Each structure stands twice: as C-alpha cells, then as structure tokens.
Length: 493
Ligand SMILES: [Zn+2]
Ligand SMILES: [Zn+2]
Image 1 (spheres, protein in one colour):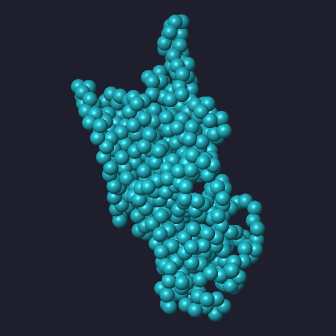
Image 2: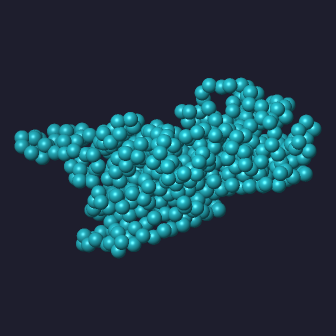
Image 3: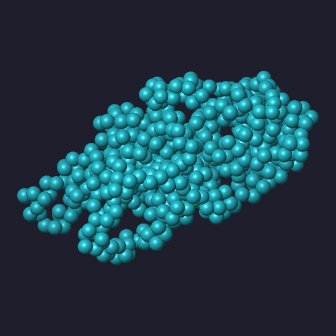
C-alpha cells in the first residue's frame, strides 16, 4: 500500500529529538512481517525501553509482537486496516506492568526510500492515543511506519508533548541509520559504492558524528584512542582512574618520560625522604590526559572527554550510555560487567580487547593470547561466554584496604608489550570502522582469539543463554531497559 503522506501534522519541534535503537534481529523480524511483499497491509507493536542521551530520548527496542491479520489487525472504520482496540489495550496494559513503551507499527510497502503517515493514519492517532496514554500510566505511546529503507514515527508524551522520530539505528554487523527520507551523505541507502563511503565524504561524515567510549587508557586503550583519532572519530570518551608509572611508559602510546616524573629516580630528587618521593609519585599525569593529548596531536578537531574515575562510578557509566560504541580495554571483572550490561540494556555495541600472557610460578612463559570480542545486543553476552569472573567481581567490590590484602601474593604483574596490544587492537578498531561505515561483510558476530606464539587465530561464535539476566529477553533480563534500571547489579561507587 502506498498512501500519500501528510508531513505537517506533527508540530515542528526543536531539540530534543527522539530516536530509536533496534537490534538487527528484531528489525528483520518486524520488517519481514510488516512488509512481506504481498501488497497488503500488516501491523504489530514494538515494545521499547527508554534512555536519555544529550541529543534527546532514545527508544530501545526489546521485542516485536505481530498483530494477527483478521484478528488483531482488521479493516478499519476510517482507514484501510487498523489494530483492534482490544489488542492495543492488552499490549499497553502488559507494557505498563513492566514499564515498557508501546509503538504501533504498520508498513507502506517494502521499497520506499521515504515514508510518512497519511492523514488517515494521523486521524486514528488523534482519536485513539489520548485514551492509550491514560492506560500507559505515565509512559509515552506512539506509532511507526516503515519501509525497508525508511522509518517515521509519531511519539505522544505523557506531558501532552508530541514529537516525530528523527532517526532509527539498526544495530548489527553493519550499523544502519534510517531516516523518514534519505539524507544525502548520511543515509546508508545512498549509492552502492561502499568503498567510496569509507574513504569518501559520506564515510568521514559518519565517523565525525560518532562518539566512542574507551574504558581503560593503558597499553591497549591508549592505542585505541590514537587509532580512533586518526580515523576521524568526532568524540572520544576516555575513562581511567589511573596515573602513569615509570614501568608503564614502554607500552603507553603518546607518553613521555616526563609524564611519569622519571627525574624522581635521579639526583638530587632520589635523595628526598621516601614520603616526599611517594607524595610526588602520586601526582604523575593521568593516563586519560596522555591519551587526550595524543588524540589531539593526531587530529586537532577530535573532542576528548576525560573521566578520571573507575568505570563503576555512576558518572563514568552514565557517560558511556551516550556513546555509539564502547571499546573495553580495562582488565577488571567490574569493567566487563558494567560494559556488558550497557551493551544489552542500552543497545550499544562494544568490543572487548585484551592480551594475556600466562606465566607460571617459575616465570616460564606459557600461552600468549590476544583477543578482540565484539559484543552486540542479541548475540551472546560476555557473561554467557563465562568471561566475567564472579570471584574477581566479589574481590573488586571490597574496600581498597581489604582488596589489597586479598590481592596479596597473587603473583607477578603480567608482562605486557605494545606490539602484543596492537594484535588485539587492530582487528577491534578495523571491525568498528567497517561496521559503522557499512563496509562489513560479516553476517554474524564472532570473537577473535590469537594464540600468538603459534600464530594461530581462532574465530569463536558467541552463545546466548535463554536464562541470561543480561542479554536474553526473559522477564527478568535487563535487555533494552535503558534508564529504568541501575546500570549493573554491583555497588556503584
Ligand atoms: Zn499508513
Ligand atoms: Zn548473556
């Protein structure tokens, strides 16, 4: 069905603008059901959580519920077809019990590069959504109309405000951004010359409006920040509460000996009393500050926001909820837990990178691993892979003094080398770049693991447990809940 659209019915709103984030699996299920190419109209509802970003509220798609043709979706009194009031009331009541927002979805055919509501569509919103808002109990309601290439939305807010949906991000191996109508230079439906998009104007524009979080500004994190800045990423949010020490210098990209006060080891400074040297030694440069300086030297237009906190601090975790992608380069279990939750609760893709060198008690080097693990909503989370160490989590949650006692005697610091970090970081940043610019030819998310001494790469397909409280869609899970739940079940310091 193609209907003329009536763009002027939603009052023009200035900022904030609403957007939708949706995993590729839910998008495909919805698009295939709604626009199945039989020239007929079909409908359903999209159940969503909500998060706040600086640009405006974001709807986070949790589940698509198809409306059964002839039962829930019937010939309308004013329009061609309509969702039955009974179906809408049932869905809205169910959503209200668990604080979800309901969007009614229908299609205007597969192929349109632009889409919008018809005046008949708007008439039905105006006659019905006031009553639905009452049932929704303080949450917004709204409608989407979709083709395979475009999405438009009409969002009704509990305070009486009404807004159109500015854009929709479909999150999968390739990140697609859909608008009500094509945006030359930004829309990924414009042209098929994918190669040009990476090196051309459109690819640069995509990267320039991207905000990437980097958790950990040590060896791997500092290299990631350098590469992202040189890629032309618009904004980098760097999180690390650590200051540089002399032994970090060889692997900290962009660091200088002076950042670690190397002069403290030389005369006359080494003659100072120990407390004075310790006092000075605790005032070396923050790792985030070294990363920010290196990023600006690489690309003077990049914006870098530094958070000199642990990632479990609410302010740091909140900054990550505004990002388009998170690079996890910190080696604590808490950092993994927090970022893993963010991926599934806020639908933000992430990549975990790390290098591990196994060393036995006698100092003999064992396996050298370098890993790059992309974590997408809808694919198995890090917890499902057994990659979040719950014993370590408990230890990390102890107050500092108790933790030092618990850590005592747990071995030598693992050796770390910049070249090994590069082995993990290069695939991670390359995959991010290809995914954001639409160049990826991957259909599934895989984890890369290099056994470096054998030169052997393994590709591991992540599993998703049906019982997982992070990434499944069972009733207890945090999936797509956005701001309605704490960020992680751990103490947020
Ligand atoms: Zn319509
Ligand atoms: Zn999981």
